[in-house]
Image (tube, rainbow, N blue to C red; front, side, top):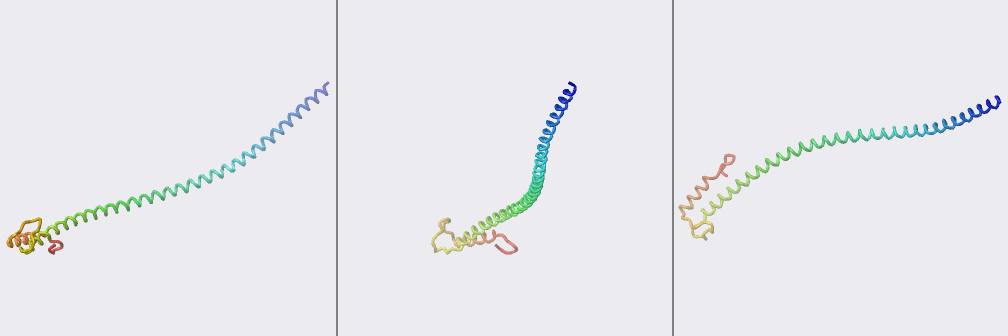
Amino acid sequence: MSHLLGIVIESLVAALLLLTIGYCMLLNTRLKRLKADEHSLKATIAELITATEIAERAIGGLKHTVRDVNENLGSQLTAATQMSANLKQQLAECDGVIHRLTRIAIAARPASGPAPVAEPKVSAAKAVAAAAQAFSERRRADGLAA
């Protein structure tokens, strides 16, 4: 009986060793797959890092471009505002010149011609006085009579 008990124990140990070997082989294949996944994961992480660096550089470039455009538009807006004010002033002066020229033309018309619609007939003395007054009202621009 003692030999039989020894054989049973030895065969039980052999069976357990076979199960252990089979389980180790299964773990080995799983570890190989895990290693392969680790390498692909490292490659994916490296690609993500590269893409992130490229995006950061692009964002930096965009910020620089936005700052330049903002400065450029600010200066152009200031110049446009000044030009608009200048044009407005010149238009106002032109209106004044046209008004004065109209008054001079009305005053210079001969008394025998048709009467202007806007004003009644004016005597020669009044026409000369109106022309002199219009002439005296003109501004001087750059030292010359406008």
